[in-house]
Image (cartoon, rainbow, N blue to C red; front, top):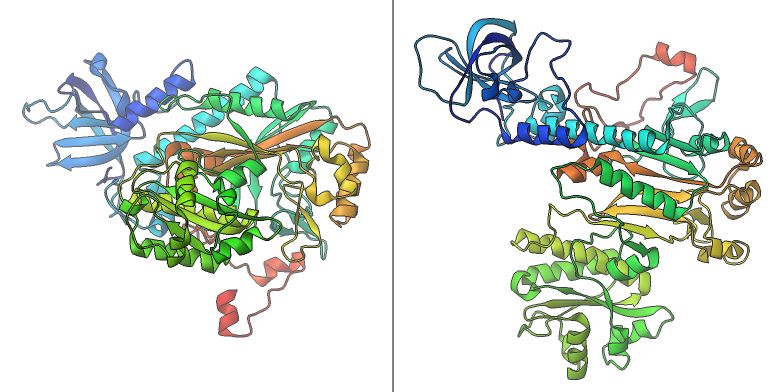
Length: 611
């Protein structure tokens, strides 16, 4: 939105009225945000040489002498300038002859001082100028000048401040920093290791302050809160960061309902004023319900296309793959309805959908055009009897031009496939002009009653925690821990927004004996690694629970940004690199010696590329 010719200039002069063009929409939006989030607008010009910001000048400032600082957005013949700072734009005239008025406010220059020069920029800092993300990250300090980045980071700051106010001032939470250097935690994501000067001993960067916040509850702090930095070594993932920020919360003597009510109030209190208000309470669905209805545990509930069980329609079918599925213990027939799919989906789209189902799920997809006269569907669809077709129309509530995608198989697998296709088809329809997911709508959902354990992917006979090993079992399922632990539900809850998990938490195990049994007997973990926590639980730990909100993801959704990197000041690339400072970087051998580390050289070029 701007392209400074010089880097910075300071002006002092008299203002006068001209027509209304001085402040961009962004400045008004930001000031609206400030007014909504605080009782008074902050003083932006305290402690510095300027008297005003560029974006705040109005006709009420007529005749005043002002001092402004900023970047030159535009210059014409050294007589007319547009000066820009974080708050907006203002027109500046270097007096020659009287000119025609061109804005509501112009600054008539009395003195001007060039504070610094600017060489040619690697890219123009304007919204309509396309630039690669790699270039933006390499010159992040320039990219931060854009109005969108300024808005994102300032909105983030305002929301965090409101969260602090809500938690600490209104509800008695204590803001406590927890250590960054800790020890490895069993289970969960892979952690970054930090060498120590003791041979063979390492710290770990915590993936969350989980153990510390539980220990704070044992310590009687009662209500803890932290804007916590967390670290996960998850490798190359497109929209994840190796270091990220979460709003971390823990409470004593609380149940699941209490945590949910707290978070609903927190979001309602901190929500930006320029968005539609948050409506509470949020709807709640169980894990089993969301899987059966949406095929995922983080559904986007802004649109329909729900999964429908149509097993009863095909009990007496002659279609082979449906017969085979229904003859098995957990076999079902499921379907979703694609609105106006016959109108918007092309033959190649249908083929792509069928190939995706075969390649990724080893499942067959049957497209059925119930009301439209189409021949794209497989010949198998011709075996659908008229009575079955009519019953499908009733169950699926189809309209003319709708397409039904039908699959059969084990319940979870069939639902997961249709959940993926639901999102794929929504993407296809929206690329062709159909609006399914309103970008201005924020649809929150609590998901509860998750399984406590899942079978390990590498060894399905063994169990791993679905959330983390400190999550308490559902009170109704405690007996299952000793008979059928795979069937036990947990007191784990997730908060989902527009198909994204933005928070997760649980009621914790506060009984040392139960925690020891789950770690040692069910999860086969070395309890010595958690001896400090088990010991603490033995000293009268109160019942407690908590949650963590992913701040980066939340702000990304609120601002409508395409990536969480657009709401972080200095993010890493999707490969975990800082392109601005060329991090990570090599370290001389002499600096590694005190840590008893030696880097081995790759044996061949292939290994070097992998390294």
